[in-house]
Image (cartoon, rainbow, N blue to C red; front, side, top):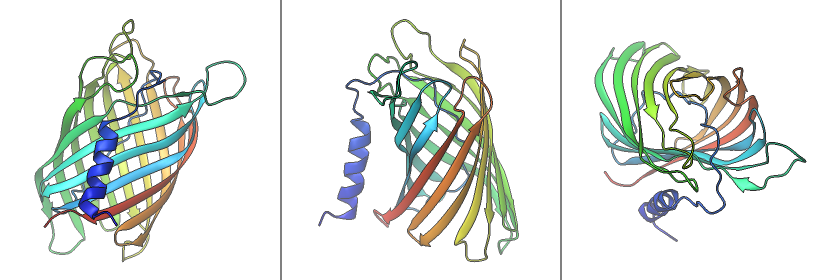
Length: 262
């Protein structure tokens, strides 16, 4: 049996070797607000989501949307975000005929300020997440960059985190310009029990483009079951309202954790 570090390394290399064959440049994916949680030092979490999503044009099957987090210090985490989907044509009969990968976003997540009481009644924190955007779709070119400021607080069982930032994405092809825009979002978590086994989650994320791309606004509502201390399972519904983003979708999630080092 492969060791846990070897499995994690294999997943990381596979993500970096994102397949580009027959990949088409897709509309910029929705902005997903993030939280202010840092993985414990040496702990890696792989957050995977799968399911159908209806864009403004074709359907696509997300296989998967992923985030890989690795805690290095109590205030420092490295992340790798991306998505891979199989998509249909804009017109004509339904089919899934080409892949549509998102740009990869390796980033560092830094905790700047954190306060909390001796128990778990309240807390507040400020952090930042920044890193380059890597072109992986066929025809995409040029490095991009994305950065977020994260400010949040916790009162009782409710945690809320405000995201604000911006991005310059890789150009999707040799003709189109780079997508450039501002992002704002709210990430919500509500614990349904005192042992953190069940949670409700919600996100509201919007993107205002400074380039010619249409703006986006989406909301999600999800349910999370911590089946084990090292495994979360979830189901999330998606609804969008503006012309640039997804219209609706349903995603199933699995989030295993493993220790790579102490």
